[in-house]
Image (cartoon, rainbow, N blue to C red; front, side, top):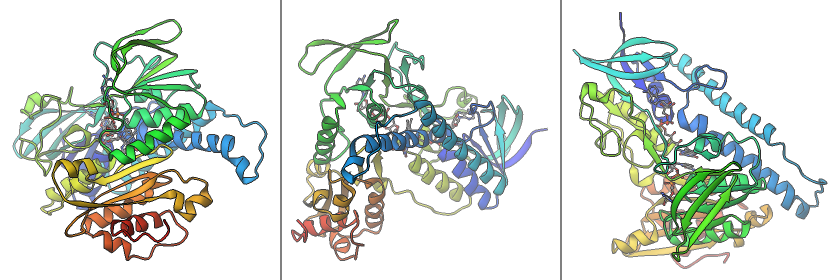
Amino acid sequence: MAQTFDVVVIGAGPGGYIAAIRAAQLGYKVACIDEWVGPAGGPAPGGTCTNVGCIPSKALLQSSEHFEHARLHFGEHGISTGSVKIDVEKMVARKDAVVKQNNDGILYLFKKNKVTFFHGRGSFVRAVEGGYEIAVSGAQADTLLGRHIVVATGSRARALPGVPFDEDKILSNVGALRLTSVPKKLAIIGAGVIGLEMGSVWRRLGADVTILEGLPTFLAAADEQIAKEAKKAFDKQGLKIELGVKVGEVTTTRKGVSIAYTTAKGESATLDADRLIVSIGRVPNTEGLGADKVGLQLDERGAIVVDELCRTNLPGVWAVGDVVRGPMLAHKAEEEGVAVAERIAGQHPHVDFNTIPWVIYTSPEVAWVGATEQQLKAAGRAYKAGTFPFLANGRARALGDTTGMVKILADAATDQILGVHMVGPMVSELIAEAVVAMEFKASAEDIARVCHAHPSLSEATKEAALAVDKRTLNF
Ligand code: FAD
Ligand code: NAI
């Protein structure tokens, strides 16, 4: 006999597990199915984000940043350490422990909220009266009946055509986060978010890192001025980034990988490396989901087609996160997961796609929300810009980290904030103020008139707001 649920969620990444918890909070009987297998063979809910994405990458970024600080910056503070060494295996073990804490935390939250967890693969079998039959295969084979189905199956790394990942020499994010020694020479294809974060980790630990990027513009999605400032900092650190290249044949050799490519000037070149990370975007996970069994509509990329409310073409079937349109970000997936659970309950939640923040956790960090200056220009929108450099911020000087700036773009007539762009220390945290301000339709003057603690990095945001009206106080 099939077990019956009000809501069956397929996938326990940030989109799925949050949808399941919120639906349970709203009083529904909820099941969540996830197939991820942890290192010990058991379930490891949390999806890409927890297992091979946000969390492990940030753990390695933290460890490698500590190492770099100890090696290069402790001296300025009068701290001597002798020669600084890194035990990469220990660093990786710590990362694994952080991941496990998160896996366990989600299992605990499922228990606390009475979400029934199934470890296995979920797929549509057929539509039935009042819902859908879902098969669970794998560790906990079962059949479930769900009145509502939320698909949150996420995404996986896109491979270069004809160059499959072997996770030994040619690595996706999975292999890149499992390296247990520092490669002498590391090649990366794609100078996007993963390329820059992973490149930073292994460069800090001593690898000679070269990133090959297809586009002629660095970080094309970011504000141009901010991207230029970030690029300057990465160049100074010795992270080699070649723009406008065309990648040709990739071959594995006994020693590593050889990448033939054409440079921006049209010259033929070869990059030999011990390992290659391919980070050229991600593809939605819809294979084996049984979409054809129920007529669930997919687009040409294999993503599930949804409207702005995350409704698919099938009544009672919803989809959220990386498996649908929009930015592939954990917080976007979570917002959609909450919204779907609340819509099932007849509520009217709203996900504002204009105020989803982007953060790149390099050093300096890069963060933004809203429109870039080039987007405003292209749209013919009249705007004012205000910038403030961290060089003139007391807290940044005390930290010894004065790279970068905060930039605010506001409507020329109404002063409403249209975009906020940051590069510098801890801007992953500073961006939250900008998101709140934009969500409340604040003007630059609103931020300029708010009392910010001194000395704090957030004063740079206040000063950038003052700069919109050409009245910075400290620059
Ligand atoms: P996922 O997290 O991919 O979860 C989907 C889950 O569904 C997986 O566990 C999968 O195994 C399971 N699944 C798939 N099909 C089935 C099936 N048929 N049956 C059962 N289970 C199934 N985003 C940020 O916002 N901040 C970051 O710092 C960040 N860092 C990242 C770093 C890296 C290296 C990578 C790769 C990604 C990063 N991301 C980051 C992106 C983030 O991980 C994704 O946007 C997020 O995980 C998407 O959540 P999701 O729930 O849609 O899917
Ligand atoms: P990405 O979309 O960020 O960057 C891919 C880069 O590869 C682009 O610059 C693109 O121009 C380039 N590229 C594509 N094809 C190429 C080719 N054939 N040759 C050379 N360059 C090529 O994708 P990435 O880095 O794989 O990350 C995937 C997604 O994961 C991100 O878009 C983001 O949504 C998410 N993510 C978020 C993080 C965060 O929020 N801090 C961290 C890591 C990933």
